[in-house]
Amino acid sequence: MENTSTNRPQLLTAFCLLSFIGSAVAMILQLSVILFHDSFLQLAQKYAFQYGNVSFSYMTATTLFIVYAISFIGVIGLWHTRRIGYWIYVSAQVIIVLLQLISPTGISISNLCATIVFVTGYTYFFKTLK
Image 1: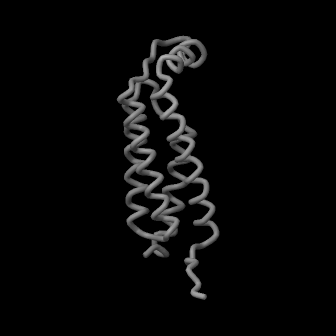
Image 2 (image 1 turned 45 degrees about the vertical axis):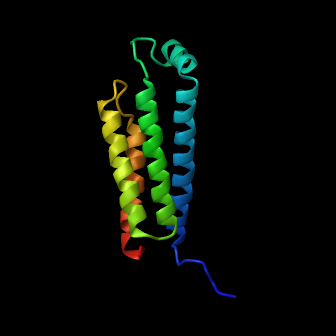
Protein backbone atom coordinates (compact mmCIF):
# COMPACT_ATOMS: atom_id res chain seq x y z
CA MET A 1 0.00 0.00 0.00
CA GLU A 2 1.31 3.44 -0.95
CA ASN A 3 2.00 5.97 1.80
CA THR A 4 -0.06 9.04 0.88
CA SER A 5 0.72 11.10 3.95
CA THR A 6 2.67 14.29 3.45
CA ASN A 7 5.70 15.29 5.45
CA ARG A 8 3.81 18.12 7.11
CA PRO A 9 5.47 19.35 10.32
CA GLN A 10 3.34 18.90 13.44
CA LEU A 11 3.27 22.61 14.19
CA LEU A 12 2.04 23.32 10.66
CA THR A 13 -0.66 20.70 11.20
CA ALA A 14 -1.68 22.46 14.42
CA PHE A 15 -1.79 25.85 12.64
CA CYS A 16 -3.95 24.34 9.90
CA LEU A 17 -6.37 22.72 12.33
CA LEU A 18 -6.79 25.97 14.25
CA SER A 19 -7.24 27.88 10.99
CA PHE A 20 -9.88 25.37 9.82
CA ILE A 21 -11.77 25.93 13.04
CA GLY A 22 -11.37 29.72 12.95
CA SER A 23 -12.40 30.08 9.32
CA ALA A 24 -15.36 27.71 9.72
CA VAL A 25 -16.64 29.50 12.83
CA ALA A 26 -16.23 32.89 11.13
CA MET A 27 -18.15 31.66 8.07
CA ILE A 28 -20.95 30.32 10.29
CA LEU A 29 -21.14 33.61 12.19
CA GLN A 30 -21.26 35.67 8.99
CA LEU A 31 -23.89 33.34 7.53
CA SER A 32 -25.90 33.81 10.74
CA VAL A 33 -25.66 37.59 10.35
CA ILE A 34 -26.89 37.25 6.75
CA LEU A 35 -29.78 34.93 7.59
CA PHE A 36 -30.86 36.64 10.82
CA HIS A 37 -29.82 40.20 10.03
CA ASP A 38 -32.66 42.05 11.76
CA SER A 39 -32.46 40.00 14.96
CA PHE A 40 -28.67 40.29 15.02
CA LEU A 41 -28.83 44.04 14.53
CA GLN A 42 -31.27 44.42 17.43
CA LEU A 43 -29.07 42.34 19.74
CA ALA A 44 -25.94 44.22 18.67
CA GLN A 45 -27.59 47.58 19.28
CA LYS A 46 -28.87 46.45 22.67
CA TYR A 47 -25.76 44.74 24.06
CA ALA A 48 -22.66 45.45 22.02
CA PHE A 49 -23.11 49.00 20.81
CA GLN A 50 -24.98 50.72 23.60
CA TYR A 51 -23.09 53.96 23.07
CA GLY A 52 -23.17 54.17 19.31
CA ASN A 53 -25.38 53.56 16.35
CA VAL A 54 -23.68 50.89 14.27
CA SER A 55 -25.33 49.01 11.46
CA PHE A 56 -24.31 45.81 9.74
CA SER A 57 -25.20 45.52 6.10
CA TYR A 58 -25.90 42.36 4.18
CA MET A 59 -23.11 43.40 1.83
CA THR A 60 -20.53 43.55 4.62
CA ALA A 61 -21.58 40.18 6.03
CA THR A 62 -21.63 38.61 2.57
CA THR A 63 -18.22 40.03 1.71
CA LEU A 64 -16.75 38.74 4.98
CA PHE A 65 -18.37 35.34 4.42
CA ILE A 66 -16.75 35.10 0.98
CA VAL A 67 -13.34 36.20 2.26
CA TYR A 68 -13.46 33.72 5.16
CA ALA A 69 -14.41 31.01 2.65
CA ILE A 70 -11.37 31.98 0.56
CA SER A 71 -9.27 31.80 3.71
CA PHE A 72 -10.64 28.30 4.35
CA ILE A 73 -9.68 27.27 0.80
CA GLY A 74 -6.18 28.63 1.45
CA VAL A 75 -5.91 26.49 4.57
CA ILE A 76 -6.89 23.43 2.53
CA GLY A 77 -3.94 24.24 0.27
CA LEU A 78 -1.67 24.65 3.28
CA TRP A 79 -2.91 21.33 4.66
CA HIS A 80 -1.73 19.75 1.40
CA THR A 81 1.55 21.71 1.78
CA ARG A 82 0.94 23.78 -1.36
CA ARG A 83 2.40 27.25 -1.75
CA ILE A 84 -0.72 28.45 -3.54
CA GLY A 85 -2.58 27.78 -0.28
CA TYR A 86 -0.18 30.13 1.50
CA TRP A 87 -0.79 32.92 -0.99
CA ILE A 88 -4.56 32.45 -0.92
CA TYR A 89 -4.63 32.40 2.90
CA VAL A 90 -2.38 35.45 3.31
CA SER A 91 -4.34 37.40 0.68
CA ALA A 92 -7.60 36.62 2.46
CA GLN A 93 -6.15 37.67 5.82
CA VAL A 94 -4.93 40.99 4.39
CA ILE A 95 -8.40 41.64 2.94
CA ILE A 96 -10.02 40.78 6.28
CA VAL A 97 -7.75 43.22 8.13
CA LEU A 98 -8.41 45.95 5.55
CA LEU A 99 -12.16 45.38 5.77
CA GLN A 100 -12.00 45.62 9.54
CA LEU A 101 -9.94 48.82 9.33
CA ILE A 102 -12.60 50.53 7.21
CA SER A 103 -15.47 49.07 9.23
CA PRO A 104 -17.36 51.42 11.54
CA THR A 105 -16.69 48.97 14.40
CA GLY A 106 -12.95 48.93 13.70
CA ILE A 107 -10.48 46.13 14.17
CA SER A 108 -10.03 44.20 17.37
CA ILE A 109 -6.53 43.79 18.73
CA SER A 110 -7.12 40.08 19.35
CA ASN A 111 -8.05 39.51 15.68
CA LEU A 112 -5.02 41.47 14.54
CA CYS A 113 -2.71 39.53 16.86
CA ALA A 114 -4.14 36.19 15.73
CA THR A 115 -3.68 37.19 12.09
CA ILE A 116 -0.07 38.20 12.72
CA VAL A 117 0.68 34.95 14.58
CA PHE A 118 -0.84 32.71 11.91
CA VAL A 119 0.63 34.55 8.92
CA THR A 120 4.04 34.53 10.65
CA GLY A 121 3.65 30.83 11.43
CA TYR A 122 2.74 29.93 7.87
CA THR A 123 5.58 32.12 6.58
CA TYR A 124 7.99 30.17 8.79
CA PHE A 125 6.91 26.96 7.05
CA PHE A 126 6.88 28.48 3.55
CA LYS A 127 10.12 26.70 2.59
CA THR A 128 8.52 23.31 3.35
CA LEU A 129 5.63 23.98 0.97
CA LYS A 130 5.62 22.66 -2.60
